Length: 251
Image (tube, rainbow, N blue to C red; front, side, top):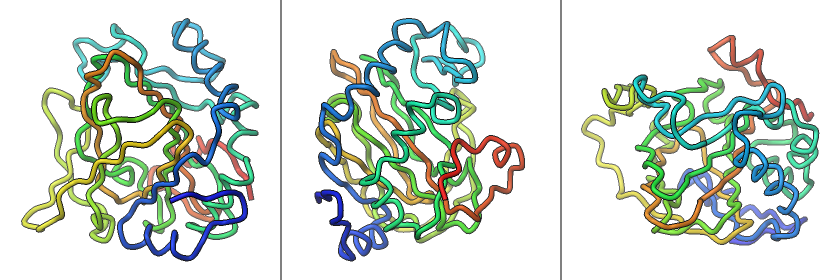
C-alpha cells in the first residue's frame, strides 16, 4: 500500500486490524532519509562514542560470554536525546498514519535503531508487548522504517498474520540467547509467517502483540532500520522503569 500525506484510508486501518501489520511503501524518499542515514553512519563508524544518553548494542550481546565484543547491532534513545530524531518523529505524514491506527493523541514510547550487518544473526519470533507491557494492549504500534532495501537475503521482516488477536503469549527463553522472549503459542493453529521485503523509505506498522521475526543477513550489505514504538498518550507500561524512559511526548 502507499500513503501520500493526507491519504491514510479506512482500508489501511482495516488491513492492520485484520493482519496485525501494515506495509506502506516509500513513505519517505531517499532525500528525506539522508539526515537520518548521516547520523546513523556516524554512530556505526564510532560506536564507542555515541551521543550522550544513547545506548549501543553489539552483535553477541544476547550471550553473556560475548557481550560487548561484536560489531554494532543497534542503538536506543536517539529520539529521547538527539533533537534531530525528535523532529523526524514528528513528521506529519508519519504521524498521520500513526494517529490513523492509534487515535489522535500519541507519544513515542521507545525508539531503536536495528542495524543488521553482513552475517548478522536472525531474531526469532517474538512480540514487542512481551517486553514493553503497555496497557491497554492495543495501544502500542511499532513503526519500522527501512533505511536500506529489506530483502529475503538480508533479513527482511516476517509476520504471523492475525497473531495479535491472541494477546501476549506466555514466554520462555532461548538458553543460547537468554535475553530473547520466546512465545509459547501452545496448540494454536497459526498461519505461516509472511515475508515483507520492502524498498528504501518504506514503513511497516505492526501491533505490539504481532508475532514477528527476521532472518540472518546472508548478503554483503547492511540492513538498517529505524524503529519508533508509538503508544497512546494516556497508556502506560506495567514496568515502571519504562514509563520513566518515554522517548518523546507528542500530544
